[in-house]
Image (cartoon, rainbow, N blue to C red):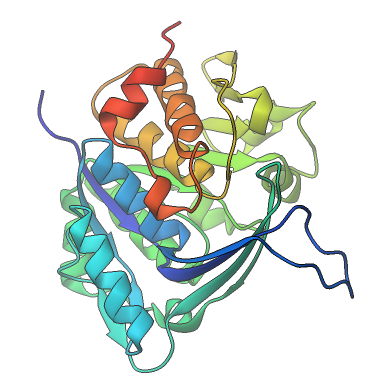
Length: 298
């Protein structure tokens, strides 16, 4: 089987992760239990996850000229991701402040830093998108950049997977170029005004969609009539921070390899579950063997 070529356009952040028995309420100070510094960002996470899942993956994004940027590049490259076109922008890298409670639930505050300056795709960056089998993008970098990448992919026949996170309105021009949309319940509500009870409303926007439902699994639907619930893979959850990124990346890799999309969602569910078993985002992203171990075929 030929190795799937994935290009990820997105953010790179340094994740500052603290754990505590509970998440603090506004104005409340709690004592935490642990603290780790972990490279992250939805784009970098999905690039690392795609490489670990078996793809030949290149990452397009921007890091700062600070020490966080040096570490980010080194760690993403060490995971097997091509960072040859990763930009360096003078100033701070993106940072995510992550709090995780004893049940694995989290609260995250992101400051974009260099990610906000990732604009005006170069011809070399566009060529990388055109040469890929699958483009994966999120919304932590300027939407104009994501749109430009998606339009280039669409024109070249590259499949476009958009993880519309964080929740925000998405321009019609971008949605028109999307082949597969991946959203959680909150993101779906922002896009359609409807929740999990009407997931097919997503298909008014795109031809195929996946709605992730946390511990209840995921829904997949398309305009050809597919309407499928895929149950979650049961594991002991330690930290759900990177599970969505592992899911999206594995979904893109599996689809690029030629799997039926329902089966690809099942494999993606195994990836998300494998990730949730460990603390941290990028350090917990599973390798292909770990995904296969938890994969439950239909």
